[in-house]
Amino acid sequence: MRGGARAFWENGAMDMPEFLHAIPKVSLHLHLMGSVQARTVVDLATKHGVPLPEYDEPEDLYDYPDIYKFLHMYDNSALAVIDREDFHRLAYETLTDAAAHNVRYREMFFNPTTHMAAGVSYETAVDGLIDGMRDAQTDHGIECRLIAAVNRMETPELAVTMVETMLEHPRDEVIGIGMDYAEAEFPPERFWKAYRMAGDAGLHLTAHSSEDAPPRNIETCLDLLGCERIDHGYHVVESEAIMQRCVDEQVIFTCTPVSTAWVYFGNDLDNHPIKTMAARGIKLMLDCDDPPMFKTDPSKDYVLAYEHMGFGVSDFRRFMLNGIDGCWVTDDTKARWRSEFTAEFDALAAKID
Ligand SMILES: [Zn+2]
Image (cartoon, rainbow, N blue to C red):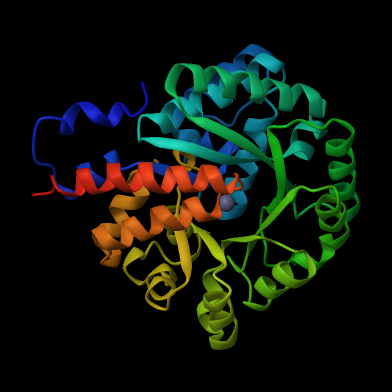
């Protein structure tokens, strides 16, 4: 029963937001703790006696003035996630939400060291998430894999420990490492060793880069860390040479309009660098980063990109295919998805008013 989106378009024409809700999607840029509904945070905090900031409505917890306050709330929420069944619940809920937007496949970031600092073992976190992923696949047809993300505001040594822990407890569903948290003061080269270990062990590699730092970080991620994708990458527009290189090498960028417009670009979606990146031929796909925490969802980022950035049907078709190209799945699976997704996309496009 994939695609709760289906009911409203089956019988007739649709407008562009309905179309963007209904199209098949892959999701390559979403953080577990950023995808937790505020009500779930309150439930789990109550269950475990974890204090939260004061609020009238649970959603008030997700009002913050800047990225550092946001990250504080993000970490605070993580303290309330303790048991294997809590992780099951988080994975199941976010994937159920995603399936209602016709997300078919997701590679989801989670931060093992954040949970380990709260006294939760890596195995508890990862096995609970896998339980939730399996149930969501059974109930909603959505597939998910996990990317363990380095918190770049912590030490390089802790990142190495994270990778060692992953290798001691291998799981088929954990397919790569990433790097998140605030970038400006914590450049990627600090983490070369964790990336080398993960790459040598056959894990896939990606990193948040040039979200809030110069385009040089993109080259560091590609050349030193060995990243296969770039998450965000907006400051690439400041370097003609690096932008051309990424176009030539068809580097996949996973871009999140709503969260980054809010944090870095004065909430100005009309002038977000994604527009320039797409116009210059950067191979990008769109996703929603931390949806409830930024009051968005897997379709709303597409709809706002449509309304503010001038993208049309052919752009969204290209972004969909770029996303499939960026997935860490077999070539056979990619080929099958290309044909299934484009058939579904084109059938939906024929219904637009
Ligand atoms: Zn992100």
